[in-house]
Each structure stands twice: as structure tokens, then as C-alpha cells.
Amino acid sequence: MVKRVMIRAALVVLSVCLASSAAADAYHPDIVKSQVVKLDAKSIEANANSGKPIDFVFDDTKLTVVLSPAPVWPKEGLTVIEVAEDGSTKKSIVKAANITYAGDVVGEDPDESEARFTISGGVVDGYVMSSTGWWFIEPLTRFDPKAGSDQYLVYATRDLDFPAVDYGDDGVKADEVTGWAPPQPPPNLEIPVVMVADREYVFIDSSPVIDRQASLINRVNGIYGHQTGRTFKIVMSSIDLYNGTLKSTNAYALNMQLKCFIKGQPANCTPGSEYGSLNSMNVWFAHLTTGKVLTSGTDFRYGIGDEDGRFGLSQQSARVSLSAQNTMVASHEIGHNFGGRHYAADHICLNGNCGYTLMWPQYYASNLAYFSDGLHPGKDNRTNIRNFMAAHGFF
Image (cartoon, rainbow, N blue to C red; front, side):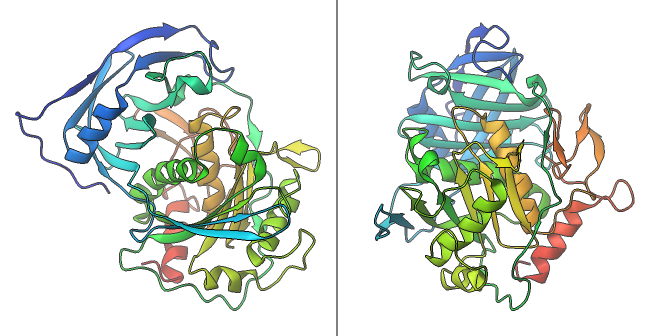
């Protein structure tokens, strides 16, 4: 839950005005309706760091948000490990200024609304969730290389339309289910994660890998923080620069290779002891952001997650998938790691929008960023996930 910030009349308000409207499918085939806005990233960053309100205008709807820093990296710095072509590793500690922010939508129920933004390198990326819709803001240069650096694409999730994608099995049975020794959770009970990247993810976008992963986890934290009371902290980022281990485009095989990578072993290593490797890193789970186009046999899929396990991955193709899709897929797969199940998902209506909840076995454009919460018998992934977290020391 983001702490509310009192707003004084003397505060300077930054207004963001609608610049133009884009025709359907002009920028991305999965978007039916979008807008182009101009944003002043420096002004937004200054207001976010000082607690001053920011006005956005989306589809003639004015929304005012107040942001504050919401770091997803440790204060002492982020450990980054790069694996070279010959298998050698380079370790560094990156001590960078905070780039992730969270906040409230002024005048709306904080339990049902929130804003999450990443501001890095003069670029803004994030979302505003309100009673008027779930609005995503992405740099227009992702879709149009000729766009100005101050231009951004804005779309609401209700204006997305794409064929349903089957998530496949209800998670993958973990290879190692005994002898868990969860790392001591930090005092603030943020769950530690090591983020992993393959070569395709590194080069699919020019922005730093750690910034993109921070942006993803910040957006995921908006979902988990509200609904489970717990968020995630990236304590390490590990990068397979030449895909020495992370080779496969098959989701199942790639998840196995992720376990080998964490153990520092070849792609065909024997399963086992990978949990000990995580514990030695003082992290609870590993999540791979892959730039590959994934399959599961002959079927395309967005990601995979160990059922009650500690490994998973999600396709995060910045030039293929939208931030909204990347957020939903990562949140779904991480849900499997913490006890979320397809069979416990539900169909609900919220603020006039009806759709399937986050752990539904198919990803439709209308899926909601909410876990089932017991509206119907046996349909309560929110409680399942919270109970799992509590059983492993995170409550």
C-alpha cells in the first residue's frame, strides 16, 4: 500500500496535455485505440522526488497522481554478474540513483488505484490504475523510431485486442520439493529475487538491462503489494551474454537451463541442489526475462513457472509485447512460484469491467490484474498466495 501524501495548494502542478490521437493499430496490432502525449521527463522526475502532484490527461480524463520513490534495488547497491562467451564471470556492484516510483491517484480509493513509474535516462515508463481504466505509458520510440524523445504512447488495457494465449499446465512441478531453507527475510519483508537475462533480452532494447528489469518488478509490485501485502526486491541481476547456458526456445527446457545457470553449470546439467544455490545468494527465487519467442513443444507460450517452486521465466520482448502484456505475464508466472493455481482463478466484475483473474489458464486481452479472492467457493488465489508466503517466512 502506498502511503498517501498530503497535497498543499501551493504545490506546483505539472500538466500533461494530449498531443494527438492515433488511428487504430497505427503503432501496435494489439492496440485498438491509443493516444500520443508529450511528457517532460525531468519535470516528472523532480515532482516525483519532491511529492508534488502530476496531472495527466488520458482520453479527455484528467488524473492527478502523487509519486514517491519506491526502490527495487538494495541501498548498498545491486550485484550484477555477466557471463562471457568463455564462461568467465564479471561481478560488479552498481550503486545508482533510484529510478522507480509508486503513488496514489488523488481522490480515488487507494485500495483500487495506484500509479507506478520508472524514470531513467530521461525516459518515463509506467502505468496509472484508476476507476477510469488501467492506463499504460510507453516511449513512442519503441513503436516509431522517428518519434521525438518527449513523445509517449498511451493506451488503456480495455483497448487491447489479441488472440488468447494458453498458459499451458498449471505450473510445472518443482524438481526439488524438500529441504527448503528460505533465506532470512529482510526486516521490511520484501521478498528477494535474482533476475536473469538472456542474450536476446539484452539486445532487444538499447536501455540498460537492470533498468528494464527494475521497471518490470516495479509494475509487478503494484499488483502484489496491493493484493498480498508483499513486494519484491531485486538483489542480483545475472546476465548470460552469449547464451552459453540459456539456449532453448522451448519454455520447459529453458526453465531447466535457468536452474543450471543459477548453479553455474552447463545447459544439460542434472537437476538438484539449485535451491542451495539460491540460498547462498540470499534470494528466494529466480526469474528469467527472456527475449526469445517461446514455445512449449509446438505451441507458443508467454512463460512458465515452477509450481510452489523457486524458478520461472517470462517472455519480455520489448519490441513485440506491450508493457501491459509483459506485466501480466510476469505476474502470472511468479504467482505459480507462490502457490497460485489456474483452477483457483475466477471470473469477476470490477469497476464495470468483467474478466478472468490473473491466474486464469488463458491470457485474454480482457484479463484483470487481480487475484481471485473467494467470491466463489474454491476460487481464492489471493489467500493461497498469502498463505504460501506466510508458510515460508514472509509474514
